[in-house]
Amino acid sequence: MAFNKIPKTPRTGQGALGLAGEEQAVAFSVLFADGQSAKKGGKGSIVAEAEILRRAFRAGECRLTLDDGVVLRVAVIAHTEGGDTAYFELR
Image 1 (cartoon, one colour):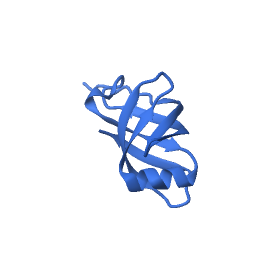
Image 2 (cartoon, one colour; image 1 turned 60 degrees about the horizontal axis):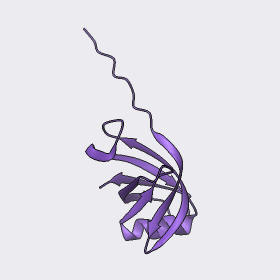
Image 3 (cartoon, one colour; image 1 turned 120 degrees about the vertical axis):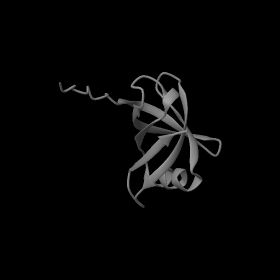
Image 4 (spheres, one colour; image 1 turned 180 degrees about the vertical axis):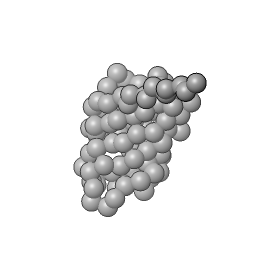
């Protein structure tokens, strides 16, 4: 008997990236490992100005504040120089 796995839906919205004492507006998409919260980790992407993402990538860890006020610790793990999208993992 085969079981169908229901795909998790990412949470998307507008938020803020906290980096070196500054908050920058970003669009985000986050997929929580348990489908609901950051308790078991997750991953996602951020869309913003290339310079902000470059700084976040070089800093490694920063804060992502979601549109409902939830603050997540994230590590930016991938960013193409000059691109407007970066990818992160939850810490």
